[in-house]
Length: 263
Image (cartoon, rainbow, N blue to C red; front, side, top):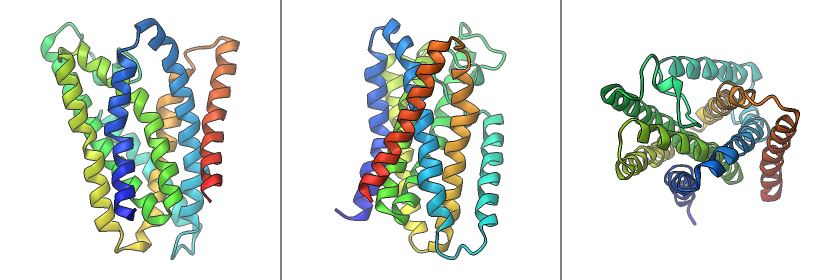
């Protein structure tokens, strides 16, 4: 299979297939979904951090033309600051629950106009985020086939709980189930567009790849630390903490095992 075919396959995994999986999860009984979602999120934290620190950053630091590690760490820092600004613009926030304050600042879901505006913001933000994911998946595959697979798995791990939350907020915003599904599929297709653009633009400028990987690592770290972990802190019971730590560790171990096995 050609490299472009691998990129297309796994960008679909991180985009469209995540939406399909999220729609299945959303169809489950609400009580089960509410109990299961924190477990999905905990695992996603581990997968994202594992991919960032065990896959992306080592490859970025060992990339062609990298003579000063400070330039890579600077790219990570600038990436973190950039995602902070995007989140302030309400274009990068993840929803993992039926109510997402970040997309409804000062608004009530009962107001149809405000609800539609919140739903539109989610779709715009999701499209931008998925596009960036596609570029990062392409960059990872262009660096190393195995790194591309690990990166795509980490993307899929955090996309599923995000899409479940986005679905729920769109439904609360007044979208029908069919429209919420259709618009989420369309937003997820930007992953493929980003992957195609990344493949054709980055394949000819190999020296840029380490810095794209550094930004990818920054994206994963930011989502895990600034977005997912704070939600886990809402459950303070010792048993919940043990479950979260176990699943975070499981996410890291899975990424490590996949990366080690493929190599």
